[in-house]
Image 1 (spheres, helix red, strand yellow):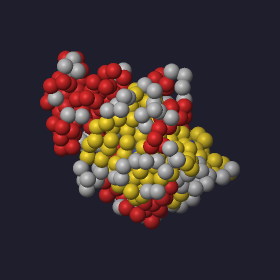
Image 2: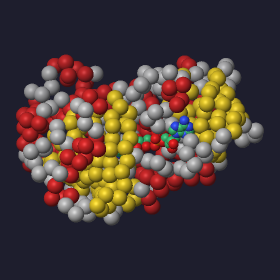
Image 3: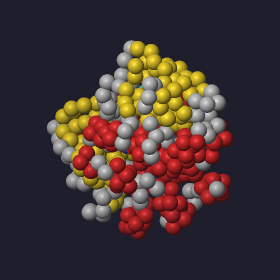
Image 4: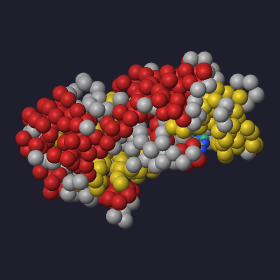
Amino acid sequence: MSGHRVDVLIVGAGPVGGYLADKLASSGLSVLLLEEHKEVGRPFQCAGLVNPDAMEKVGLESTILTSVWGARIHSPKGTCVEVGERGKIKTHVVCRKLFDEGVVSKALDKGSDIWLNSRPVSAEVSKDNIVVTVDRAGQTVEVEASLLCGADGAHSWVRRYFKMGRPTELMIGFQAELVGYSGAEGRLDMFTGEEVAPGLFAWAIPSGRSWRIGVWSLANDLKGRSCEQLYETLLNHPIWKERFAGAKEVARYCGPLPCGIVAHPVKQRVALFGDAVGLCKPTTGGGIGKAFQQIDEMAEGLIKAVQTNRLSLSDMKRIAKPLKAMKKDQKRARILRDLFLTDCDDDKLEKTFKTFAKPQVVKLINENGDIEKPVALGIKMLKEVPEFRSMAAGATWALLKG
Ligand SMILES: Cc1cc2nc3c(=O)[nH]c(=O)nc-3n(C[C@H](O)[C@H](O)[C@H](O)COP(=O)(O)OP(=O)(O)OC[C@H]3O[C@@H](n4cnc5c(N)ncnc54)[C@H](O)[C@@H]3O)c2cc1C
């Protein structure tokens, strides 16, 4: 980097900004990360689930606190469906602080630079470059770049500044870290029902010596309650309160989950990544795996475009083409989630759980269940489980296939 001129300026040094910087710097581009906080990885709002594919991409196994091979999924009235096979790891649970630091360190090792305590204030795009005015620890400086990337999370400044649209859904997540929860080794718990998690689910995730207990919901489904109140209801719920007896809370977090890719993920010389573009999964809220996939699919095009300084709107749209398939997949996942969970009242859920609990359905879930690819399993269930066949009307089928 000479003066304040870089090939790529990335706003946000979370896991997504870090992974993107790593990819771009590895190909010889000069990269500068801006992080508004004084350190990487704090504060964070995350259950810390990182699937094995995503973990392999960054090789940060040292940040794993524990791994999960199965789940106990609870209906509103206490029917419990147990899925998973011991030894077949479905996901890892990481320390997010160490994970974020690890991803960003790798980018720095490849030659990226980082400015902490720094944020963009304004930006101007021209035919040849983009000039961003940055507040760097209280001082105003200008950075000239070929490309600006927004990896600045759910409330992305880049997305808002360039009017790139809004994520389809913005869920609210609340989580507490507890010691002394009576869970099952290697398995996470999911709780459903209007009282504890209207439209979605609450969770208990093992994280080494403690457990992460959380809930997420859509604002409309909360009907005036907060996610914190739902969490308190879960802790005192007659069916599950025994598990929390004697548990002690050691931390609390709250944060948004943007699900649904925005209308304009790219503009001339500007691109959005991860939470900024709305990549969280509508089925689980997980955002890291999909964001790494987005970067893998767009990196080569971006690198070539920066090297040749061809970053017009049409160039950028071509590079962002993989997002179309990801958007379609998100839409299908949302349809299936709504069918099986979000649009169901407690009685309907209870009925669905009775079917889920049948041995042949558990077998189907175990054989086809993949946290990253829920659509394939959902469609298989609609086709192969007689009790579910009538759930999807013709129009829904068309959307699922389309
Ligand atoms: C309760 C909860 C549980 C979750 N659990 C999981 C899970 O188990 N697994 C999973 O994969 N995902 C989970 N998620 C989602 C996950 O946290 C996000 O998808 C992931 O953090 C996205 O990474 P990111 O780098 O895009 O954004 P972030 O992690 O939000 O990072 C953005 C970075 O940009 C910085 N920044 C923001 N604005 C500016 C600015 N203007 N200038 C400079 N810097 C800026 C921030 O400080 C931050 O460091 C969860 C979310 C919540 C709320």
